[in-house]
Image 1 (cartoon, rainbow over the protein chains, first blue to last red):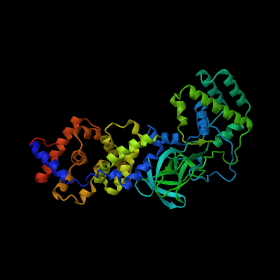
Image 2 (image 1 turned 180 degrees about the vertical axis):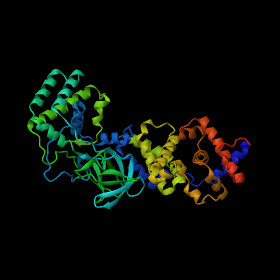
Image 3 (image 1 turned 90 degrees about the vertical axis):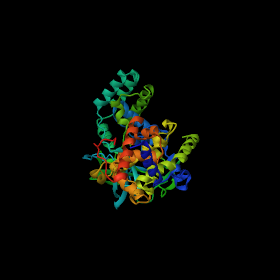
Image 4 (image 1 turned 45 degrees about the horizontal axis):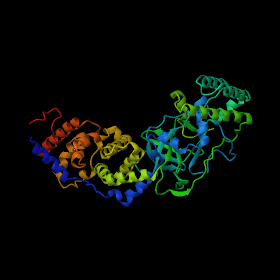
Length: 313
Length: 170
């Protein structure tokens, strides 16, 4: 075959181009609307494209930071002030309060983006096909954090050895620890089964978008063959460990609303004493200090627990 | 995020959107191409600070991955063929191109051959840029292009597919 005949093949193919490029297509109304949605995506400021990491950056409150850093120091969690006598759910459409059931386990889905159809009230059948409301995978339901007196003591000793805290700080932490009873650790483990995700519909600059009725901001999903069975995460107090957590992607049907302040709190029936709060706060503060001084260069084994995108209580 | 960053991105977007949309449209139709293009540029926005100075080949590569992913995550598709084997331009299948013999031959080509030819004939990429889009070296792409052109020519000439083991030189 001569080069000329080969060129003829390409020329014939060019002439039959089934979808010629429209140079001004990017300036069309549809394309411009898509552009506005894209640049409104906060994750654009992050180099990291992994949805989990960017979501964490997007929604972490200063209080949440302190909580996460506490886990960095001693592998535990922390808790905050309010209680919710009306139940463990959020009236904020950008939030989901949930509880994990340690007796239930699920394989974490790998599909990053799904579309969902309502199956029954609060329940959805979702797949990777492109229709309906879209959701993106951001996390998996984590098991409760088991904290013991021995673990805290070991964490203090480790931090002291590593130079992350000084002896005075270690002494204060040990004093805090001695002031709490063993019931604190049981309460802590129970509280760590509950969590709050926030930031669905958050478009920045104090604005948020609210989904239409019946569209949850967050779903918890389990594999079901080639599809996923999902339900509203908000108010679900029996989410299986490992189940996927998906956040809704705003569409044109979402409506703007004033941004509501995220309101992390303790689940009903759980309350910490002043001494317990003192321990938790000192743990969080020291974790902040040690993290700053080490510029975040923590060993992977310690950094791993921070890969959660929400407040653990 | 700065307005300047958004403005610069808008420039890239408006310059490249038509090409990326057409690329996706040839493979999955215009409607689904809207989403593929949007996802491609969303990825570009997130990576904007590290985008190459000439982003088009990179964008084609992302769009190609988006297409493959949209196939590969679908259980029914996965059961039958690999993601790229599914890639068939809808408008070609419907015969809109007005060259039935060409489309008949096109349909007999492998997905890899079609992709290589489309990048040059329709996306009008140079060998170097097309190689970047596919994630291979320019020499490798040249060889693939040569073979794909030859296979298409053979199909057009006598409707007989070229065996994978058949010598390329006549």
